[in-house]
Length: 426
Image (cartoon, rainbow, N blue to C red; front, side, top):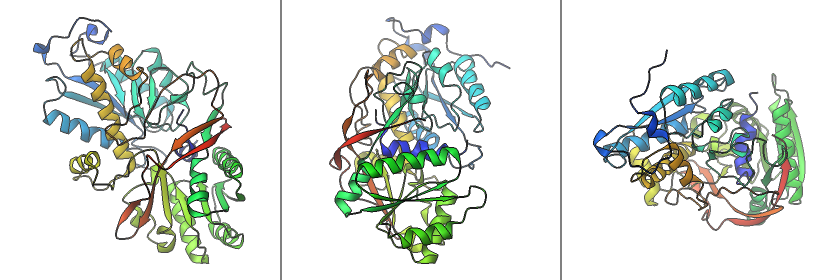
């Protein structure tokens, strides 16, 4: 599976916070039949987008993939839709709760009769088993929890090699690669890494995973834990400076990251990289880190998708043109755009025989890597009986520079390493 250190970073960071309207589509439209759907009906193709738009971690934390997906579908409809049918996007805000998520799933599947879910971004994906039982393909969701490595019919944006028969990973264990740590060691000569976490169970658990991966790559690791309610980031920053840390990794939220960076600037801690993840790969860095100019310019992000700043790339340029009206840009928006493109390719392949849940799911299960026109590193889904011990994994890397934004570091298709896979429990 592509639960690399990159993908796991998203999951680890976000695990911190611990009347029917009917359908205009006939039920037969959702059966996997060989008979074609008459084009004369011109019925829209309904897709659902679930996001924790209002949640304990803030209103903007989970909306990027939704906004990217909507931008894709708006442009698609302006160009004629899929086989002459427009895509009707039904959004649902689950409020960041499991109860709300299950309610969204029921509404979208049972009432709105969506063909698929796209770019799901849920703090608590409690309705995942319902989606799977209904045979509804969930395409390009963010793996905040373990759902995309647990259930069939769910296809996370980074892929999976797990059996997905109802139990997370292999007997409850997931695996993450060490390519991020290998990259900074081999390319930038880093040898000592600090890992900063809260004294909170999910944060501490993720910090242990990062620590295990760093040690597997031969790093000396400095652990820094701060109180979740009253964090003393200055003390942590002073210690990691005294310990000579080259890199700083964290299991913190965005606010915690900005406070840690400010503390690092205050004590004069200078590092090769303050490494963050895809969720924080945004254009709002100047505002988020306004009080930490030195640390801000030491921010590096790693992921599995092409830098949204790479406008020399045709696919990225199309994304940026379509989203120029948004107040900010982010890597999660680009990944939501890629998820919507993925659904579109699946639905287009089904146009002659009928765009049904079953046909779309069959496209997703065809066993071929997918890149969304080069926006993603090749995404695959397999069901391996045993987890891989090692894997060749590539990563996208960017560094923040004031006045330039996120600057790509090397080609994501050649930033590749054969690395061990480290077990952890979600």
